[in-house]
Image 1: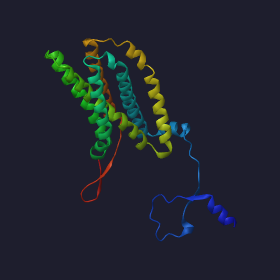
Image 2: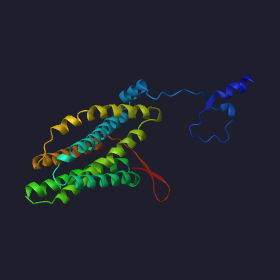
Image 3: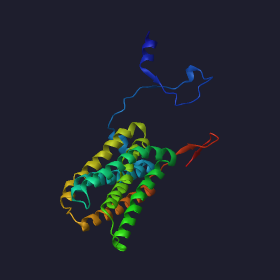
Image 4: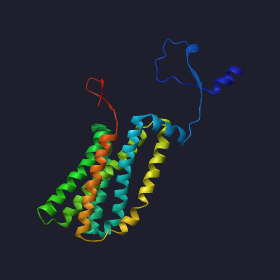
Length: 247
């Protein structure tokens, strides 16, 4: 009876090993331990000792906070943008829906790091093309073109808003994933607290709209560099023969 009672309070950890032919007396038995939702001590220890984990945290924090800041800022300043407010809002909303839908497919086929870098390169190129056509070549672009440009820019930034949250969960050890997300949201909330003050200083006009496009371009470039330099992701993918290779 005593042995049966002890067995009910013990969890066997097999660690995904092949135990065929192994006697039960040779199994390693460990007591069940409760995992805290916010494990500050182990998170800071992991952050200090593990360079890969630290680099991933820095890269994800930069990318997710900047993407969240731009999405939140855009919702404040959309009435002051050039062009038609309804056309701008509809264009951005449709492209954001497409971004959230396509990000998962892109991660599956391209890999997480490639998807993040490509999504930041996309708004950078679109912003650069728009500034070159509108201000260097002095071409007159329609309000519809401006709405499409805003939508395409937000497409890349919105895709990485969800991708970096997925990266925060998948690139951290399972017991530390909740703590990772809590700390990430803490940084993000602190950054978003300045959004209303910045939006209040935004004045309607062509010069402000041009500055906004430049800001999007610079922010995309910063996040692309951060994702390229900091994110340390080694992904496994099956080839046609079924053998796994590391990307």
